[in-house]
Length: 442
Image 1: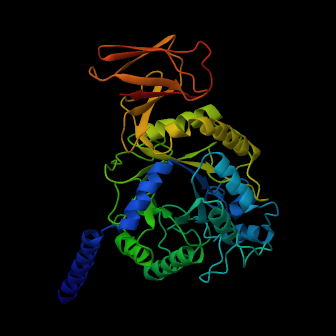
Image 2: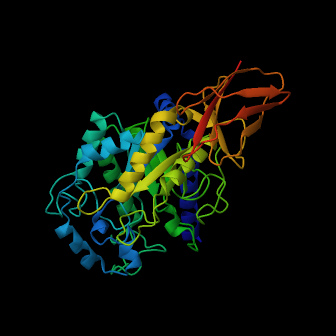
Image 3: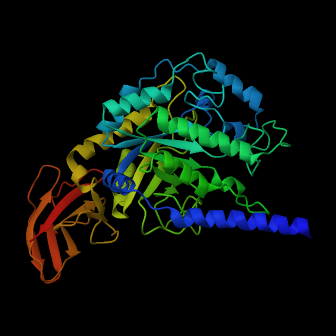
């Protein structure tokens, strides 16, 4: 009985500690400013890159291929991305209109893509390349004014101290020495390295929380403590977690995997509440895989990606668009082609994306609407599907129209307001992924 009381008391202390973390987190002013900046940017690039690119089977190949971790690790000995040029990467992202990049610093396979004192299993110590690709990317981002963010897996398929969850059960681990205290220290030390070695880091993007979601005894990841540690290093750093549930205390933005908020077409967001207080982000692949897949050439069209970006903004959401770089350090040509097409569209229409959020209308058969988040009299019509010669939209009955203009070419469009309806005469030759009309009211 005494032992039971001792354990109960310890549990109560842990619960109280977790509650304390939940109650005491107050975002810094710099953090709140970063959230606003994040929202205004609206478009970022996601990079899933690691030694898994050598296999060309996606980022989960250690799991899906049912490989032994030691055999899998031999890919590090031949990983030599000779064509890698961080400056060229960042330029391609900037030209596409993106404002930030999030790269996998460490994925579930346990390989670190940065120089770390916590493990020799990293890009500098375990490969013949010997270069810190993350440092080069951080330098290029700094030079070209691109915000840098890090993906970091909180689960690990090779470390013996990680308590094995649903995945990574066939990699050859003994699995008899789980020690989350040890693993938690490892994560904290690595995250501190990322935040200090490659500063400034705008955000940390965590993944893997879902690996213990079906445990018979709820697993304590100690996330509030982890987040408090991160914010103690840099209070302004944004924290997000791809856990597929409602935001946890200490998180600064909420992400949705392969879906827009409130949707669940990909099966990851069932029951996931949408925050009305935090910035939102949708991460989406260009093809199907996150990491480079030699067999996956089924890329979404540039038209689809442009419309996805506009849809995201119309739902007050950022788009984090993924690319899986090749093992040689090149970005796939299919991805580059789509970045170029998005960039050409953004050169003309970025004012309807950056700094914008939901417009006055929910999605219509013909498209969506966006409007500046700072307010004003202007909103944008994103016409995906030609509705015919006349586009009718509802407006305030008492409002007057100042101008109706096509962003592409700057042509003034004929319009007529009748009561609570605005009738816009459209050109007969509308084409492209998204024909944007700027409407300004008096």
